[in-house]
Length: 162
Length: 111
Image (cartoon, rainbow over all chains, first blue to last red; front, side):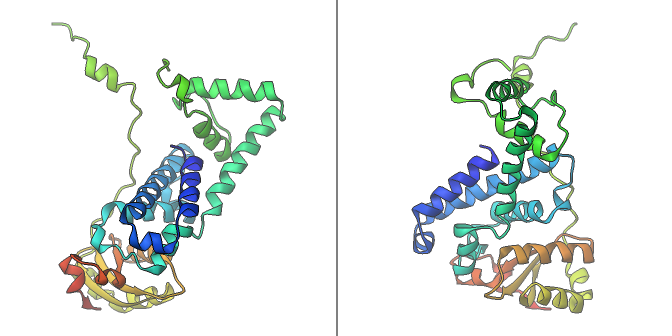
């Protein structure tokens, strides 16, 4: 799942629950852990795709460190108190930043295609064919992210040859 | 004898490569941590962390102020790693409420 989809899942889970559920329902809590771990992996993948170290930017660093905290710690060593519950359940303080980047990536594609539907389709088809093999050169981080977003195969063509 | 096609390698070739993790520093030793105790305590306070204690190599325990969050803890970790040139992870003392918490966190000794 890509970053925007993960953030969407987190948002949906957040809306499905509350701090009490986070405190009392360990499965609910662990699903949130798993999604934040996946977000941290995407932060690492995104920075790698755009040629910047994950430690070079505060937002990506924090998401990566959150991944490490959740993935590398024994569960009893993680403080699940109200403060941390608030972080994991409601938000990351820098959460808007990745979302902004995603919307920037859409705008960047829009700049190329000038909002023309056929041009959008052509762009998406090209990116899908590339399947992140590096055959598309991206000019900006926003475009690199758009390649990641659009190259996620649709369910109907998951088994088609790359 | 010519090399034969390896069907497993062939299939794996289509799998994307794992993400390259950044190089990790060695874990901070107790000696490193105690020799920089005053600086670490001051640095921690700037990020809303008090009651800093050494748990085991690379592991500290601290108390996170109510108006701070996990990201403050991570920012302190990175600042501490820069100071010591070694890896440091901080665990919130709120975890002591949990059952089966690691013994090193329970027995951590103040800096």
